[in-house]
Length: 207
Image (cartoon, rainbow, N blue to C red; front, side, top):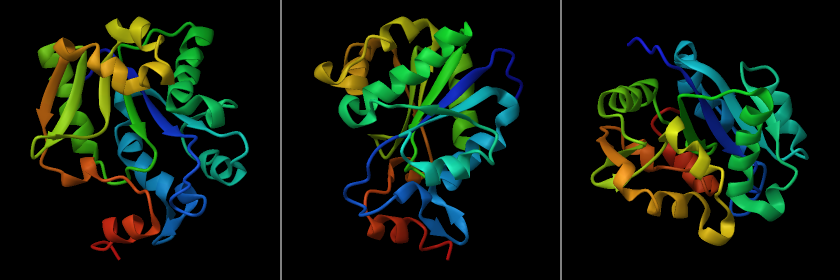
């Protein structure tokens, strides 16, 4: 697939993983951390992207150590504890303002969804360029999953999100007419890791 206009991926990795009982994004299965599994599909299509931004809590030094070895930009969100996911998205968008970059599109995905595949991302890109929709969301069995693909034409509105207006969920609710649902054959677009049991279950076929 040829992509003439490129964009970025934003991976949200500044959460506190209270239900996991530890630093889940650096937890390992088969000598690979959870965040590395999540990033694999984006690194596989790196030629189709201008960059991959990973937003982290600045206190998560172990995660930062892993990321410094990968082809990603590390964005530290010092407000992650008080500002929620919205603050991490806004922090990533600040990177574009400061750098005077106007991406054509953005992928947005939490860092704890490890089994999205490169072909899933390529399908969303194809739908983006074919439909010209503002937002592309993958579905499996009529359930919406991840990642989101958001067109650059909606970046101004995306910059207005906050937790008081339900963050990304509120943004999507305000732009229902802009959403195109792309059908996926990958059930793992719905699967995030909240607990250690989730981690073991999701990777049970790989170990």
